[in-house]
Length: 416
Ligand code: SUG
Image (cartoon, rainbow, N blue to C red; front, side):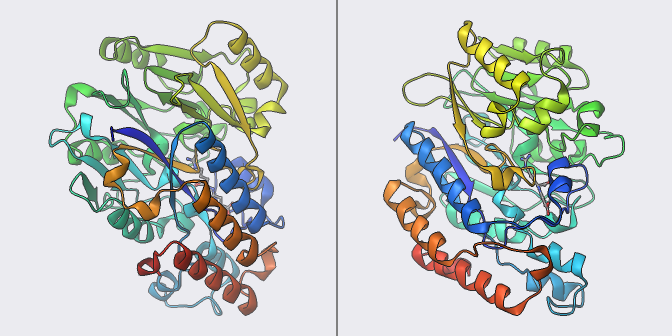
């Protein structure tokens, strides 16, 4: 089989909750203290994958991490029973669901050694995310253990790296040589800039990318300050198309010029602030959409329901579809539980361009496997979590058992 784009979605874990841990992520702050619904959340994620399969796309999964992360708490000299409430919430977060932050991926056509390179993200800016990488790395090593891949350890924590959420790839087709765009932040006003230029440069070197086919782009301070804590909240690329908000980049002209010079048939689709204010774009996650090319060839934007409910955004989409723009179809998915802590359709997935035959098949799904996952989640995932319950023994027991049951169903108990 040929090299295709596979979307690996993080299965939303049984500890999914609203602890409000992410400074600079406005949805996370808005939802702090709300009652979460892990079962409904995970089932929403499964339905999104089902919709992608129905479009003819290749679909993979990553499994939830061990929560609470007892090893991490032990490194801090405590445990889940004794830890103070905030530290306990940091150890219980299901944030690994947002697979766009799992790793940065450079597919084989772009690299000097013809391997698909993956660097696990260190996620060092947010404490609750900083301990994801060992669990992610363990999965990447199994899923991408074949010779076709090179899996790298995280960039040293001196430099923040948040993975594919700050990385875009443009190419005439997925299996053609591409240009990789690394977006970093210098300042975010009152909010942290999570992606550091040194980290991005390190990844480009480790992945053996040709310097002429790599572009480093500064994210605009205004976008970060408005709540775009990752570039994928204000921009998304697929094949020849870059779809971005007018205020996404510090120096838009140079990004567009660099891509025009390097990608044949490059198309830039810009949404002006006058039509969709930055706040509307961020609240609706118009750009945290999956921009994909299904086998029927119609470039498709998979947006969250919130995009349809935001009038400026939906009007822009309708005008674009009615005109002759490059996005030819829009699909709406319900991922409200994830959206409520700032994770849209694109946050939930990691794109890997590879031959599916080279991936450990346990990480790939079809409708039957999704049916089995639905059963496990429907039976074992907690229905709801009140924020004050995060340290309760009964809930913790339920969460640990749920994860183990899932690993058994997927025959992935080596990750237990
Ligand atoms: O890192 N939210 C995640 C959302 C990640 C979205 N990913 C991409 N844009 N690719 C984050 O801010 C919320 C945690 C909480 O509310 O407790 C959280 O971690």
